[in-house]
Picture 1 (cartoon, rainbow, N blue to C red):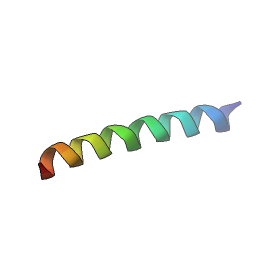
Picture 2: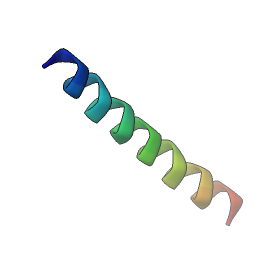
Picture 3: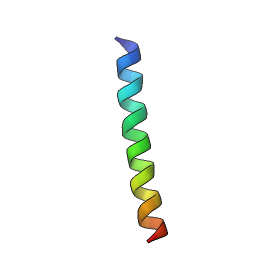
Length: 26
């Protein structure tokens, strides 16, 4: 459903931002 798609996209973006944040901090 659309909800699942939005959830997957949100998780993907959150993971990408988390990775970028860790790289920036380190």
